[in-house]
Length: 233
Image (cartoon, rainbow, N blue to C red; front, side):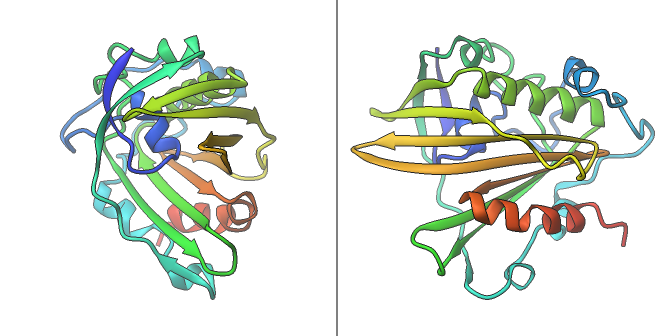
């Protein structure tokens, strides 16, 4: 399967652009499968009458450098690079093709993103992504992606002619946070270099928070990211 995706950074957004591509803010997804909610034992939609937050509202709820403490520098978003991407050795990810790969049922149009470099650690970074939609759609969409990625212990992504060896490991997520949680540890290997990244997602009502980056930084800032993203004032 070959699709056009954004590979500006190797993060959940980049790898899973197969399932969550960029789309217009006016695009809406079709009704999604509720298997992930049922599996987690949570209601499919905790607030069916609540309107999802706009991208502008999500932008205001992102962490900033003052929230993180000393040693963090905001990273401006890189210009998008649209490369052909091939996933090798992971049928579950390939099955996310079709509508998902072309901006169909798993697209979350209301979103915001920020990234920071931590000067206290060599090449340490942390990225936060916020999405808002009805709870059942968030649950089914992110659950399907994490199931696919953690269901393949090893696979390969070929992006723009560069082969990236991937290893994924499902991690225990902090159950005390939000309504549903997902977490994984990813190892990227290319050119003899290895990068380990943790990704944890928490859904709280109609807001989904994803924090990615150096494992220690993810653990340190996940709680405050969720608190700010779901604040009522």
